[in-house]
Structure formats: C-alpha cells, structure tokens
Image (tube, rainbow, N blue to C red; front, side, top):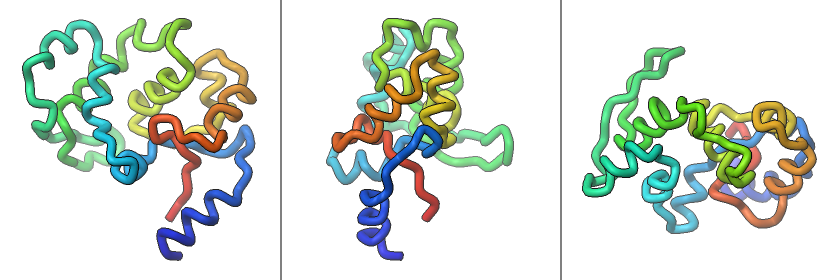
Length: 148
C-alpha cells in the first residue's frame, strides 16, 4: 500500500475507544514542525534550566529495556523519557488533556494505547479522550496507530 493509500484508509476509519493512538513523528515533519523544540516544554524544572543554553540536537545512545536495541535519539528526548517522565508531578490534574496524553506516550516509549487505556492512566473519561484525538485537527502528532 502506498503512503497516500495508507493515509486515505486512515481517514476512512472511524476510531473507537479501543482504537490505539501514538505520536506520529512523521506528522511533525509533514507539518514542518520541530518536535525536539516542543520537547522543551516537557522537561522538568531542573532540566529546563540545564537545557536553557544547550543544543537540543545533540544525539545520545538509547537502549530499549525490552529488546536491548540501541538507537540514536536527541539527548533532550532521552532526558524527558528517562528522568522527567518518571517524576510524580510529570502529569498533574492541571496538565491539559493533549499534553497529558503526549506525556504518557513519551513516558511509555510511544507504545500505542487506546482511549480506554489512556483514560485509565489519566483518570479521564475515555470518550472525552477519543473525541479530542479523533477530531479533524491533529494535536501534537497524536494520531491513530496503523501497522504499515
């Protein structure tokens, strides 16, 4: 299936509370946005200060804890995933829904989750999450997951 066919098929599927979502990093490229810059807003206070004068494009090795696969990722992404996302106040009741969902995906290595699973993790109604994520507007690259 060509990328255009896959995109067209994705648009025809009506998501349900069991449809899995993820951060589509390709969306960031297509939208001509730099998601690494956006990651700055997801740093904890300690790392916001330390990254204030650092280059966000420096790459580091990241080891997948399940597969032991080593990949190169931006250092800021590694920091968010391995430190900031583990802090107890990373997601609070005041965190907006879209930010909270984005942060869940950062914390879980972008493993696809359904609106029902996200609702359980965030203590929010699955239908509210579904309505937000399945609207015509794509929020922060969070889209239905499709296996290509």
